[in-house]
Length: 251
Image (cartoon, rainbow, N blue to C red):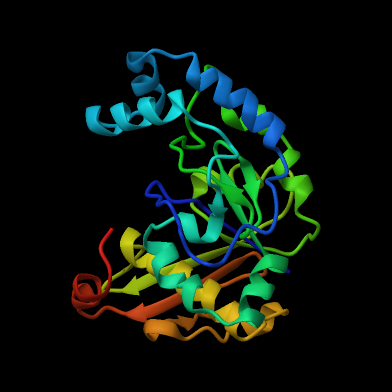
């Protein structure tokens, strides 16, 4: 069993003692994309990245001096979005980190696919960007073929899962809030739950899908009735979870 997750837009320069253990597999293909990005004007790059003036200016400046070997840090510690905060890899024990090394893949617009301890440098490029052609067409089946398993737990957004879905079967995991008259997926809660599930799987060394169903963090429970072999639904009763977000994490 393997897992796929999305990267995060927010990244940090990591000075943790946990040094990169490996080099990204598709560095040559990433270098081609980097060359394309570096050849763009500020206006062209802003159009590609579809972001604010401030973020575009930062990205433009970063790409002008970007080097893959310039102080890389482990991918799992460099991304800092909500999912990664709730995964909390910096406090996991060695056995859990080893599990992630063997089971987890991070999808990336620039790097393609990453192992948790591949060394990466801060960048900005989403998978849905066009450079000028689709990155989905650029990566084709390279990313899916990297995953040496046909049991793949999908904890990524659809933007990134689309890189794998045409080539390998996925088990989609959903996290719902049970409201009085309906169930809804709320983006921030989904990101939190995905991170918690990765941590749960690592801490308990989960190898079977039946054990995945035992996930109970933050009040979620596996819904046998609405789940299938390829869709795992976890549901919790709607409560006031905003306090957790305000006190523990911010996007």
